[in-house]
Amino acid sequence: MDTKHYPLGSPESYIRVQTSYYKRCRQPTLLGDFTELWVPWSAETLRQDLSRQQV
Image (cartoon, rainbow, N blue to C red):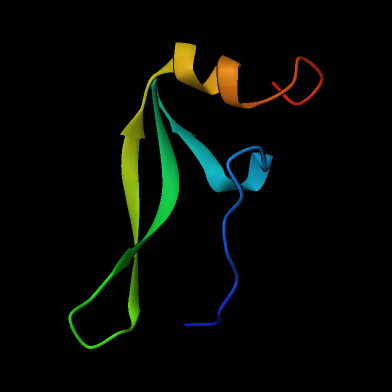
């Protein structure tokens, strides 16, 4: 995995699956690497994270 970070306000850090939203996050492992995972995210929190033009 590359060292790219997923900024909170970046639209590509989120996906919508049917009526649910998910945020891409990086979880550190015990070996010092990172594992990419998708965390369930609420629509209200998504509106707070992104600007009106990005939503």
